[in-house]
Length: 567
Ligand SMILES: [Zn+2]
Image (cartoon, rainbow, N blue to C red):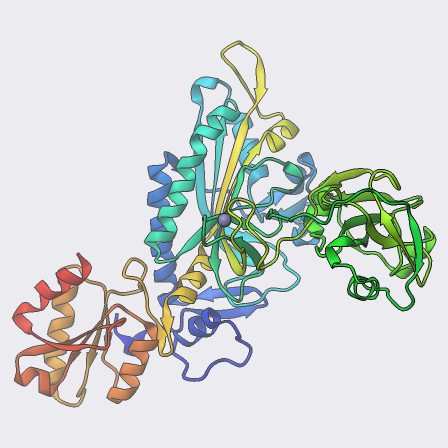
């Protein structure tokens, strides 16, 4: 490819609205251009990278016995009604709905469980056909309210999604590690360090979900990591050692005046007790305004996702003053003692000691020597605490670290969630009809491209891993007004292509500075320079993008030198 005719121009300035480094570089290096919010075109350079990423995913899915296929973007709403997702609060408005000319309700697919399960219902009828896995690399649409960060959070995206079908959970359990390993391989081959973490599987329950997280300050997820023992988990699910409060002989309840102490810190200081000797009340409400009273030891905080899961996955918001007033709760001095008309969910930390300080449900007063279950009852005791940086690891006791990450892939045991709803069954050995047991596996190709840039760049531009670089060789000719140099560069360009190299040839009439800056920005692994000076020595100037060393290699040795780089 001659750079003089390449479609898409590099940008010298950082685009004003691009804050994330991968977004900046993918615009500046002419990989992508925005068409509308969260909707991008891939320019030729970006598309070449994307196709290489896709090919790596394809090879790894095929190695896991995957069969590639393609399903439509436009799907009838009835498929989504059959699984209940058309009318469910999630995905809600993220599912783009419209009518075709025949007034049929349609959607743009944001995922393909509906279509693939309906297909499986038609195509699979016997246990003899199982297990099997199908996958596709295809465009999806998700109407995100806030797309941002270039390719990291978009509305239209290309995704590799796979679905496996099994006779039972044991077969899925047996297959799952193969997909998990395929994902490890994909990220490694793409030059990305992705950490597999146990993910929150929400109301689905079970431990059978892993996210592959790429560490980045721009990430929207929080991971909890233990460097010591390797514990890695999404913060939504992370456990930690909570330690114990003091335990001594249970004392009688005592009401004490604590003026102006509506926070845990204030009341602990006022009464001269450690925060872990207090109980904290947190109030959240469901969409109907029903208040949930979350009770936790004063030195800990409530994890809203764990709390929601404890309630069966209900959506929660912080209770409003109005909602609290309706059930007679005095904010800042709330008490679990005598509380009515609310569900009380307690963190298991309240069983870690005795004689806690809690609110008296009266402004300016607290209760001392509050003991569970002597003084109050709760609806459920479970783990609803959030893990924070510095909390001790539950496994080894060393301090945990909280880090931001981008979710780059997700593998998930679905079970019979979809097959049972749409009646996708098979005849088992014993002659009975059973719902297909499913797994689903996704990686966003564009987001992975962004993650590659996030982890492979320097202050001058992208540093592509060899596996996914848009071209292998960036050939620069210096002296485009010297016919001898032009001739020699043209010959080398043709020769390299004839032996199978992908070459981007900078034949433009630009200065050396402009050409080298663009080469650094675009980030192709090998830069070869031909000039009057190199020709005098019948050699080529060779440089690797990740190394500042410049080497003169004799023209006759060049092919052998390149083989060592791409071996
Ligand atoms: Zn640990």
